[in-house]
Length: 368
Image (cartoon, rainbow, N blue to C red):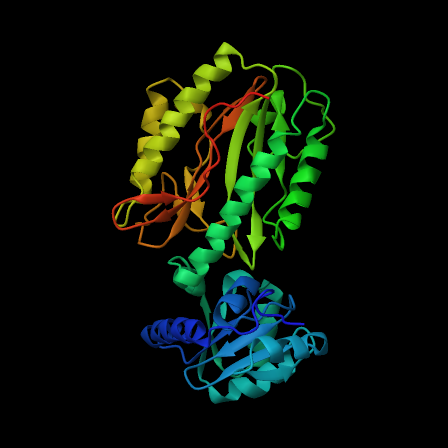
């Protein structure tokens, strides 16, 4: 049985070597000799290791260690043959204390560990511990071709799931049953798992941006918002669509067209060098022209990759600028308490002069 990736016999070590070189450069700039990596997605990004929530990496330009317990030793050997393995029971202080003696200053992912564990590290390690935040996440923002290929496949699967699930949308089916079917279809079509709790909300429930599917059954005239994605070999896309059951009211049609114009405005602005804040502003201005800006209550989008929500953020406070081969969502929504809501979302790869939309499901207001 091969662990890396699920359908490949060999991994491309040059990809990980390039990522580590970029990390070493950052460590040198910060005058940090080694980095203790605790966040699972960062561990996978730098080493390819996919097992164990309590695993750690200790990385320096001269040494690469994986610390994990006995359950994951064989997996680590298969996935990371060029790394030094140390068996360590959580919380992993004995081996860390020994290995850390070679370094005066060690960076610690402060955002990925508890305060109590950080205090234990300070008591057990003689090194000067330097809290760092979002260091590896910053490297992860720009995707390589291997990552883009996996995200594109996740998007393709999401599109096929949407096409299949639409055939099941009819009066009488519950939100929960729809969500369960989406989860099944994602895995049946090749995803490792769903990227987040699938959102299926109808009628007045659709006013909740992150509402959870319940026992409510669809009725004629309902609006239904579907928001889902699936991890494919660790990487995810993300999409949302709002559809109508049996018929679409005049109000829903009017709001939908306004929202679609705003979403398409955001997509047309995606390109390398573009301010994320300006994309968000333009989307809000488009909705403001229809008097709908008070009902758009979240950011325009976010980055995608090993996590469903990554940097950069497309929001009023964002200082980020898009770079080529970032992957972001454009997902404005309208939410009206007591009535309902709608959202249209696509995953978009940033190119030099345009945005490549990789979720390609129909965006006209569909009625089933």
